[in-house]
Image (cartoon, rainbow, N blue to C red; front, side, top):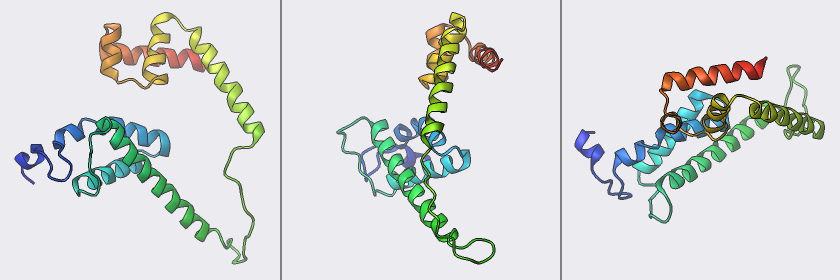
Length: 176
């Protein structure tokens, strides 16, 4: 495909390709948080772009472009999870001895696990609040709010290197 074709409005959805690509990093971060697998996250975002370029999804302008793309991504994530459950259910019918294994295992966390997670989260949040202002601000804006690096740097008036140093120091203090 030529560069002119990539930058011209798509006949399928009325978007310029570069408008869609501007949201790629956000979509990949979103998918990574959900899947905990960077390679799989890249694949799912690629699938989103295939749907958009293939004309199987049309942007009607009733929402923000990012919201529309995230909606497509969420549908792709649900499809992926359904496929995984379907295939893992087929694979787990028999154990290594060849005998049928009909036990159902609940994938949801147990109540005691949830309580423990809440306690740990409360402890971490309290420790973040105790950090010095510069470290606390970068943790809140970059990590907790997942704001882009450039936005946080501009807000604090610091370089990216300084931001990463502050994040490192904050994480080190939280681990101690």
